[in-house]
Image (cartoon, rainbow over all chains, first blue to last red; front, side, top):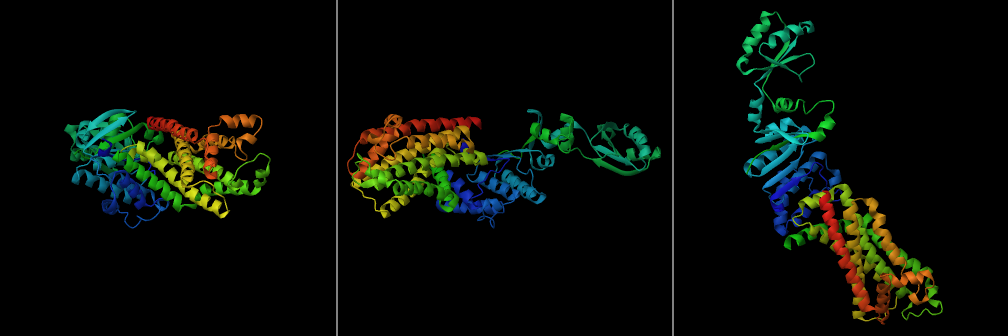
Length: 259
Length: 256
């Protein structure tokens, strides 16, 4: 059973005295891959995660992103059919995060690996996952494809920012004709989650114009997993005051693909 | 079985790679036995002139056996330090997750302890021979001596592994080290058992290390004694501490 599973931990616990290639040597040996097969598999994985040039450097000289990519390579040594990734992109810069997304997506789509991925980043789950489970205080509160989850909660949200703050009341009055007011947007803005029958932006603009309201900004937001999270838990996952506490209690479990 | 051996090979490769490429790991293992050997042989050699001290191959050979057994036991204990360090750094969690067979992890650490000790034993033996140590025993006797030390090395490694697996912190080092230290030094280290008096004689008489030490000295002097008792104690220690280490592994698995 354990041979079918690969796992990359939240903390990429690597040995600072070993190089990247030596870590792969350890991992391949433990899985009975030796000799020429070991060299080929190590080279293949190092190339895939973009660590060929750094392969012979000690881990203590690696950046956080390099460690995560090596961790992923180590988890793939024995060609697992199921891969568990525990917050693989936490703390990574945009470039490293994108590189990891590409590799995880490729694993799922091209190699048929079933990936279970936990993440604090809703965007990550949206990009990578075929199925998403939202866990709140240890319980799954929503589960399904990102599209299904988004369609379950609402249609689009309209966000308007009045040019004159005194006109905020008028904007609220107009927008509430089209849906229910919602929170979590900019401090000076008014946001309304549109009811499905009243999703016409043109009508909203006409109504605002009829009231003589001048806007500095008007946007329509398609539903995101952030909206789903907000609807299911009553809170935003990112950017809230007690984010650290929430990190311990809430996360998304995303399954990028099923074999 | 194949999976267990693969894991053991990987784990021991890593430990030995670090041991041989990093002076911080290699030097203390060599320094302690060489220090004891130099201090005891150089500073205490006149003890051999005490009335009743009857050891035909001289004080250097008398002390060499103790230093050899001490180096064997401590090479095993140092392995436990490494395991505790791996728990603290999180690397043990990686090994536990990656290993298709976790008992191979134990096997790998214990095998690496054996190789570490053999390296130290070669150096200590070379130094002793350079110090003109007399050897009275034949090849079979010497094989017996090194086999006894090997048994003690494995027992020490399994003891320390069991402690490290349970406590999972480097702060457990004294717990691994102190009992071994006490057992070794409450044996007849400087003079034969017969010359010890008072409470230390009583303690040394029941100390399980004493028969190993006496048998080892018998081997090097060519007058073997207590062989069966010593080997039985060595094997018994290994069996007992193997069970201790395996249960420690299960404890570490249960702790996640």
